[in-house]
Image (cartoon, rainbow, N blue to C red):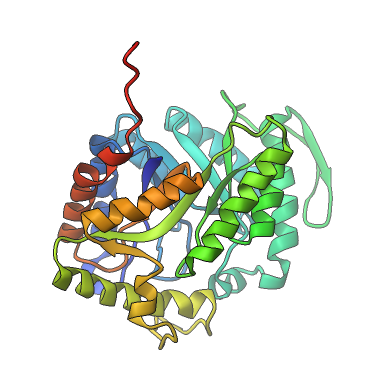
Length: 343
């Protein structure tokens, strides 16, 4: 099982400054590159201070310039917010600028607050996404493309420059039926149960594996990546403190994900949660090394190809970097591929 860090920029205090937030994320990417993580992942969100990243491809290029080998995933580029005729060229350029390390995760958007304020009603996100994905795929794989559809109508065009290699596409999807359908389309999967229970995760992985089986070998190269809130702690008091921070984070996240979308000048208001801290504790990975290794072993046995660690939920930046280093040193070696003695 490979490991990634989600650079989910959290900005709970305006006085800290966006420059400092992104410097923290860049430092985490550099550390991930040095410590042997497989990838970092970058969100796309606008107008809000949670998961704050309005320019994921630009950030991917910066990360590539500061690192040597790490892959850079988008988690995700929200297709309904973009014109595919523009985005396709930006993706090709980003792939070139990152020396082929870009892994393009795409999705339809999850927060009604930002989608509707940017002119895309949530009721339209699915059909807009489906057509946008078809247009994007055509522009990236065919030299000349014309289109006549519900949201796109254009005469023949060619995206320049042309891709120098196939763009690796990943679908962000939580619903097991959606995971099955996306896998059957030949797409890698990014998923998460968020604060949901283990049973949902088992259903998500089972849907992926069932689709791969139905592809009869043609989908053997496809992978599933799992994202969960993560923090490696060294004491019980530290663990409880981080759980409280995570519970507070989800109070903001839920506001824009499933709740009323109450945002004050860009700052998401924290709302009460029905899920208790103890219930949340069973659904995320904030724990010591032994428990972390045990839980990740369950994920590995399920067939998860890549675990995306979510360290960024409001903890002190210095403590977060320390936790990333400890995770790499105390946890990741237990999941390293065995060395072939014949090599």
